[in-house]
Image (cartoon, rainbow, N blue to C red; front, side, top):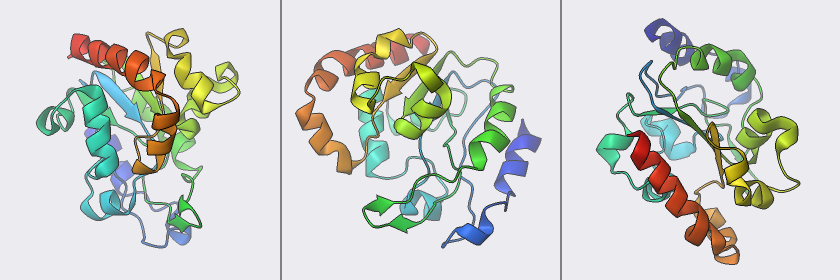
Length: 189
């Protein structure tokens, strides 16, 4: 596992396309119980090299009902984004994750995560990649049907502050989904 993580950290495949250069951000241990598959690191995470070290991470930890020290314990949580490096800024936020990372690295990583019991699929990119033709027509419908994907996968929206409007339009997420998420996480850790 350490060799694989070192290979990922030294990857420069996307260097020509990344305005801030490469800085692959990943957290994993062969003992990780819960895998978080998000989109791609934001600028702050890129600069610090720590996954979910921003407002989105604060929200995600709140959703999970865990404190920072536990969240950053790689024997509990693995963080494997769809793209390991910050893809850059677009017109309405960060660019989509680069498409090279997941096919190149995910399967290799997942084969080392022998104790993993749950995969959190955060956002549409992760959901489309892993759930393939079982996703619903929209992210909202996929998240609402989260029980269909358990016990292996738990689809979630991205916890970005940009999605506060989505959360206010979908109160069922706080009322129905988050209690199950917190209970599921608590039972696994």
